[in-house]
Amino acid sequence: MTDTKIPPPQVWPTLRATDARALIRFLSDAFGFVPTAVHGEGDVVAHAELSWPPGGGIMLGSVRDAPDDPWNLKPGTFGAYVVADDIEALHARAVAAGAEILRAPFTTDYGSHDFTARDPEGNLWHFGTYRGEPQ
Image 1 (cartoon, rainbow, N blue to C red):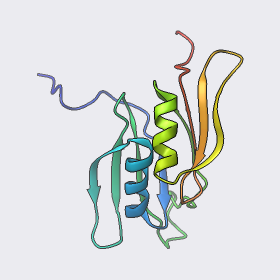
Image 2 (image 1 turned 135 degrees about the horizontal axis):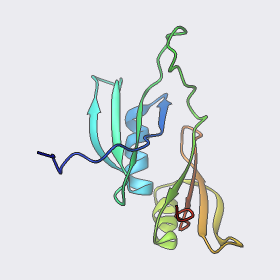
Image 3 (image 1 turned 180 degrees about the vertical axis):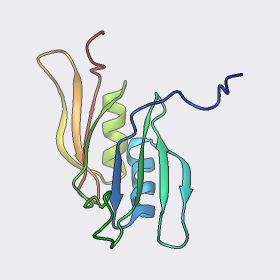
Image 4 (image 1 turned 90 degrees about the horizontal axis):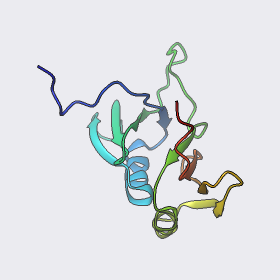
């Protein structure tokens, strides 16, 4: 029997943050990510999952002082392209939440409507209507 509540295998981009709890709040408020799991105590987030309502999501956690950790990613070095339908509304939401807008909404030569923002940790987020080429 298949559990229909568990999503099928996906790609989950992952990042680390100096203040993971604040970043989770920001990504929820500014862009509409939905925290579905946050594990850890106090200021430390060992693991968090934020779903993107149309599908997929990201994982993140607090930066760790562990030079031998092979997943020792530097905060602020992440970038993602995220498919969204209503770019104007999402842009307005991001602005209202204090996101740094690097490029206001624009239309590409291939028809995607996009904008680019930076979160408080320095990560880059590019939102657009382009869903990729058919396979």
